[in-house]
Image (cartoon, helix red, strand yellow):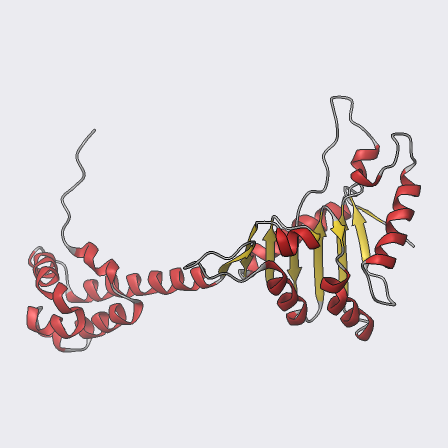
Length: 272
């Protein structure tokens, strides 16, 4: 294995925030550094790193690199740093469980309620199990009643609802729907409810899969992907972990997947 190439000192620029990189680019292109790179001119921008970087930057200009090219390089680093900061701020943890000193978290129920409050046009909720979920879903049910254009889709699993192996699927669907609207949904207008019926039609080569996803998606703009079901235990007592994502392209991919499951018939609607 060949040894790594020796560092040229420019990697120190990765230690600086985006505004510093932008200021360095401006100085190289339009400011004092356009007349020549010196430690004294770099120090107000780069502090203690000025000595090392002055040597590194001058070695580039001595080998033919122009100041304009160095400015472009710094602007490229600036753009990359800004994009990284934006990406980091668009993904946050949502944790449920006992508190840990020094690790601040936003618990799952708080994130869910915040998303429900933020939603303006549509909400998708998926959970393998629903239990004692009325309080958590109450704001969503109220919004659904007050706004006829507001869409709510609930995606559930019914495989664990079957009371005996030969029980027909329509009976399971009807019993779940009645129970969900009575115990979990405090609204007049029922939401769309979808489920994965594959468990009722076993495959020749083995058991079928189930709908095991747990997530909340709002307005094609934000998604909570979590281990927590919509149960009191998961939301309040269990140790659960999730990610709140505010990256529209990734959220759209998630919704496209579930839209595809409904349009291709993998998910089936439960009608009242």
